[in-house]
Length: 401
Image 1: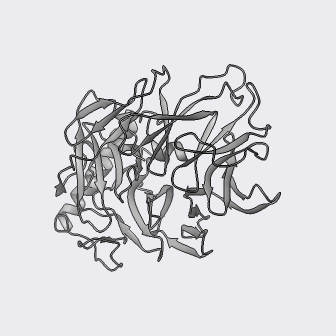
Image 2: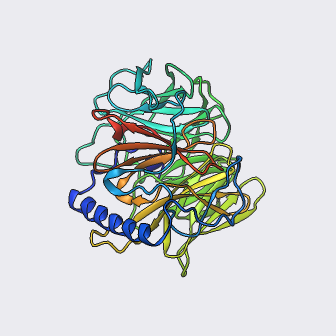
Image 3: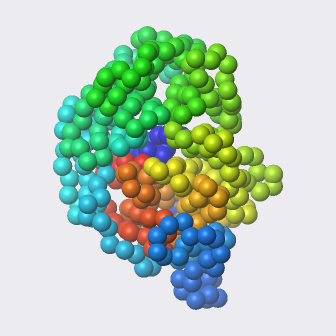
């Protein structure tokens, strides 16, 4: 889950035949809509406003405002990209990238890594670690622990914080969990050794022994949220665990997002799909009802925990079989949904999304036939900020979460 939310480098290229079929379906639908409805007419705004001064678009089904129509990408009224917003680009030598000006500068302190780097979002920055080399004959065996670095949101270079096989966000600002295994150990049956450290590398607590076969996904105010160390068939089961207590305090099936304060999971659709959000501090559980004939693929909490961005999928009935998708943002306190305008597109177009900076700005990367676009949306706004990635940029390695 976390890799999908944080970057698009692991996403397989979309089949051209499927992409062309989806483009044709969306173009046909767009013609029908244009014939029977006024252009860019927003849906009735009957939900409460999330934030800001502009009225949000309601969640009453797909929004045609600024339709992302296949090869043309996001259209309609958009806002200019903020020149101060920058994003990391992974690769053998990661760099900072300013989409508004196309400027790039190297991120200091990272040695070249042939297999590139993995970025994990933590409070006020990222934990950065080189991707591991493949282990012939044992895909679940640990290698040699690798250096872990911290990159602050506004930093020009990284700080090394330790060595580990796996990293996870801490439950407080400025901490990271590092987990290590003996070289060659099978992580599906071995208990990892985990320690919380500060972003300067100073230990923030004693080393603990994790339950065998489980790894930390997110540290929370009520313990560590653990997930299986290796991918398993079916819906993954996550467990909330306090190291001081032997038993798991709670289990969750189908977790789609987690933060230090909240956990969100998708329930089985019976018949309508729902997302449950648990506030770990208060114990309050909020239900988010999805639009009819839709389901949720992924999600991400905003840095302040007030919003949950959802990648909502719809069956568009196309021969290519690809789902249509759009972003909707739930107010965590009420569960009310707001459609992110202009994000209705084929699911094949979505590369990644998330909240990459301390401010509440949702960013999505969309790859169309003729262009790659970055879309930024702030809760309460009726328009997207859009930037086009120039040809030749390694856009698949942009870190947007």
